Amino acid sequence: MSDNTGLFPPPPSSSSYLSLKPSYLFPTQKSREEIANSNSPLPLNLLLLLLFHLAMAMAMAKFAAILILSLIALSMFETTVMAGNGRGGRNRNPYGPGSVNIYQCPSRCATRCGRTQYHKPCMFFCQKCCRKCLCVPPGYYGNKGVCPCYNNWKTKEGGPKCP
Image 1 (tube, rainbow, N blue to C red):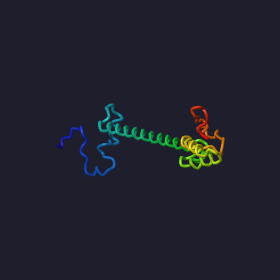
Image 2: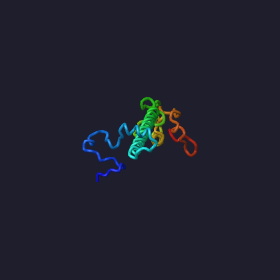
Image 3: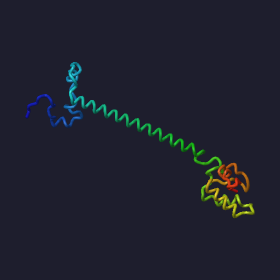
Image 4: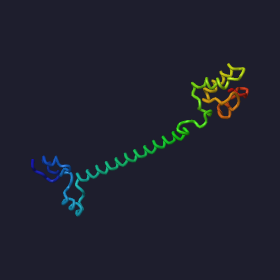
């Protein structure tokens, strides 16, 4: 069994298991010089080791590139969200589109319809418009320009739907 034909390296001794670089994977300096000076192909174990390291380096480079690109994309998304909200998440126009939550519609419409003699129909249509447009113009009358949805919603006859 000790007949070694040179095709395979000898089995490692028990002390080589403790070293960080196993001697049977890495050629010595002498064999490196012999390889550099000769025209013979690289030993199979060295060739496989080089291919393994090349594949690992490429995989790590791809992973690093994907990680960096995903972080850049995530930071751009966060910047877009913050820019869309205006000043720190507050709306610039307190009466514009989206300035009212649905639960605020009754109180805003009570203010808008407070001085009309047709209080019930005004409240009905104002709340309907508020739920759709999420805004109620300021004041008791007019000022519909600050809420385009409220201003542009018309009846079948073409009259204003929202008070």
